[in-house]
Amino acid sequence: MSGMRGMMTPAAMDSMHRRMMGMSTAQLRAMMPMHRQMVDTMLTQMRSQMQRANKAPDARWNATADSIRQDLVDMQSMSGAQLKRAMEAHHARMMRLMNMQHAMMMKPQ
Image 1 (cartoon, rainbow, N blue to C red):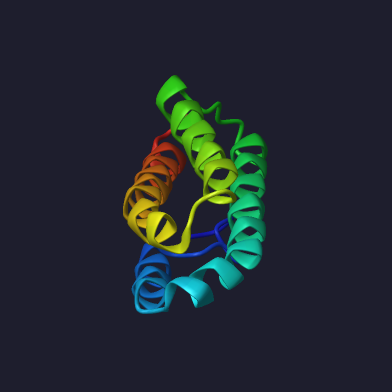
Image 2: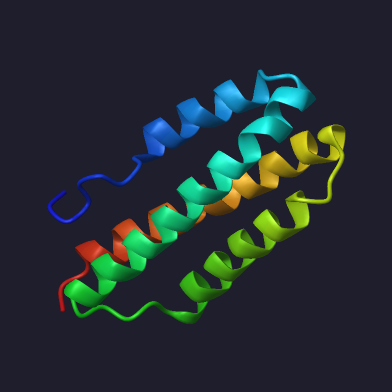
């Protein structure tokens, strides 16, 4: 989809999630700084894409994005086992946000 270049696709997100869930808790914790950066970049790209298309995020989109940001804050202090459990809900929120983004961008002005 034009304007989505460089953004992670749902299939790529699922693949990354499966790889992360297969990691040891120590490996997962070590990967979190990179994950935080990737999520931050993705959220920034999504907002930029909406601005370029003159689309305003709705309350659900904003709430989901805020929840994702809060996940990243909360995950910093989690044990490896807690982090692994939290990744399921985090992944679900990420997928939900991507689906909302796609629907919003496909909707005619």
